[in-house]
Image 1 (spheres, rainbow, N blue to C red):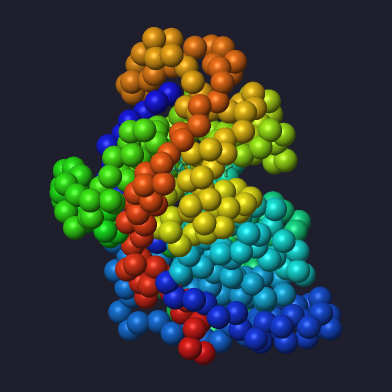
Image 2 (image 1 turned 60 degrees about the vertical axis):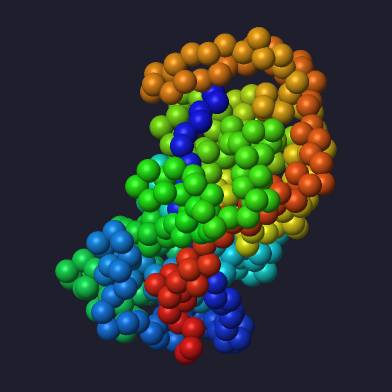
Length: 397
Ligand code: HEC
Ligand code: HEC
């Protein structure tokens, strides 16, 4: 289960929530239902004459996706957009513990950061295998976050002047369909690639080999701790520090969903709700650590306000429960067995009765905690967080 995959790394402009959303919200309440299909007023997007280069070659599709991502017309009452909960400045996470949906209802989990991770399942419980599925899920599956009605969306967007050109540029005709909306949103999310942090620059181009260039001795010591005594790399590995190619493993191993000992009694059963397997209760998708310094609050329930609180948790706060990861237990090394899994990865398997071994807190010193935090701070890609091609095109209206 222990997969050590080589690390190379790869998401700030605050978006103002327009005051008019309130006015629109109240005025739309007073309209008849047929009129609610008519567009709200997000303003007109300001776009460059030549589309930005998104790196995927799908620049017109990504441009359409960017407009859709920030357009409040996608919501039933024209009050929220994807970008209302996913802020670029926060690596597309929400800096509130829970996100406000329509009619002042709140999500029950913290809105995750979004950085392009095509080979990874999405959401805290991994319920979406890819972005095509994921982009409509947060808004469709939860009554409390209901964002748009797919039945009326194409007709609604067709009544908005700027979409005709955008769909035409992206798809060759101006026709608006659910599949096209989905495809453009999916493209934009897929293009949210964050690859220019100080840590990225401390690796040799081409090989991805860490050389430490430009990092302080403390930051380098933190990276060593991350790989060593901290054991963070056992889970936060792969290009995005989120456990590598998770969706490939999903049906064979559950090791990429882990319980990190936040609670004795799981208030949210996480992965277990998807698999209906009690052994998965309390396990969650390993989150990316890219831009982690700006994605507070932390964990699926946003319980920790600071990175120091997260580190304190791993150092001395881990709670024992039947599904706690074996990585946090005191298991003699001779009880582990090595094997090669069906994908060719070497695995280190714990003894079958690993849950009976006691919790082993990391017990980090103050200096080690400082170093670890310093390292985590090197994962911030300031360009990504302020890159105009990912920004809200409606700002400035
Ligand atoms: C009302 C707030 C809200 C809105 C609006 C919203 N999201 Fe989210 N989003 C969330 C929350 C909360 C989660 C985490 C839910 C979970 O994991 O159970 C999430 C998770 C995601 C993820 C998973 C990230 C990952 O890799 O795990 C993606 C992708 C995503 N949202 C895309 C979108 C898109 C696209 C839109 C617009 C169509 C959108 N979201 C609108 C709150 C929101
Ligand atoms: C056994 C696997 C595992 C190990 C080892 C591990 N983590 Fe995690 N980490 C996770 C999982 C799973 C979550 C999400 C847990 C949740 O929300 O319930 C997480 C969450 C986090 C978060 C919050 C991310 C966010 O977006 O909210 C940070 C920061 C973090 N870990 C850092 C570390 C550091 C630093 C170490 C080493 C000291 C470490 N992790 C060791 C699996 C692990």
